[in-house]
Amino acid sequence: MIRKKTNLILLILLVCQLVLLAFLYLPSGEKGQPMVELFPGLTADTVAQLSITDATGKTLSLKREKDENWFIDDGSSDMFPADAGQIQHIISNLTSLQLQRLVTRTRSSHIPLQVDDKVFAKKIVLTAKDGKTQTLFLGSPSGPQTIHVRPPSTDDVYLARGISTWNLDTHKESWWQKVYVQVDRNSLHEVTLKNSHGSFTLRKDGEKWQVDGDQSQQEPEPAALDNFLQKLTHIAINSYLGKQYQGKPLDTVILTLATDKERVTVNIGPEESGEDNDHVIKSSASPFFATAGSFQTDPLTGMKKEDLYSKGEEKEQQ
Image (cartoon, rainbow, N blue to C red; front, side, top):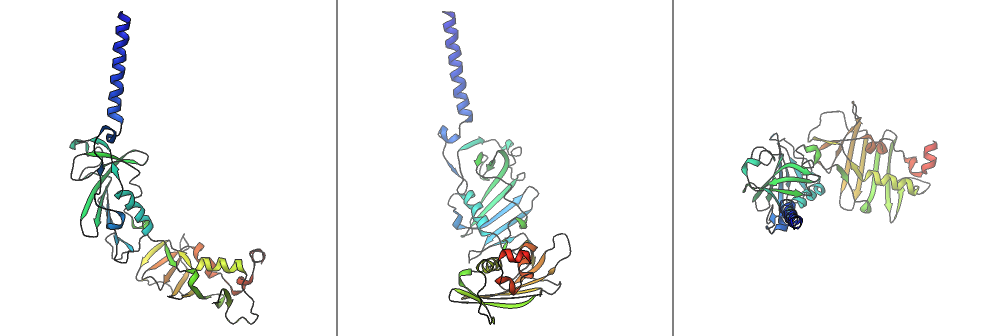
């Protein structure tokens, strides 16, 4: 009889422990607490500006212009082009966050969790196209892709999943639009290249490309032509320099790309001294000078007209 009572008491205690564990560790949404939208009324399409402030107080803003292009504002004189796809991905993650897991409601926990008004890992401010702003404090991590967050209008601190602070950098280099030259290859009908090996012009007649002035009427080798057109219509950069440049003349390569809608001239200078061996580059389609690595520039600085008629195997043997 005593053993049965003891077992019953132990069973009751076990049930109480399970209930307590469920109450403490289940997401608060499962405990009947309402969902919390961190940026109510905002969507990725309605955001005009994302501002990020780090723990040191440094702030960087990403601004969307009326033409839907994004630019970086870090307080310097130039606002460089930003990677729109990267920004849209971040903003979509932020505006779609809905929290269910309430961690604490005590103000004294804000500093330890790094979600205080002055002590935080990151402070995010989203500005809508109508000028209204909404703020969120991002704090310490609680696991992979899980961090503490707090809206400034409340003492409540929540857990947010699917977001981290490492990809919300305040260095402009993290947000640069690295694609510097982008020309629609399908509408391209003329290419002129001038470098140390001479110059030549490619023209498209119907669906066929031919070197201007080639008396043999020989068509370029398809693989060599495809490789050449692919590299000159998509050029990435390593960094932006600004709207002014006082260095060496940019005449190592002069590339002109003509389409039905635009004519783009790209000037590339000699190899810069230093460890990176970059070249300064300037496109007529951009107000900014930039630097590009040898991987991007070598196909243009070393290209010869004869290479268009050579198969890959033959070129390697030369």
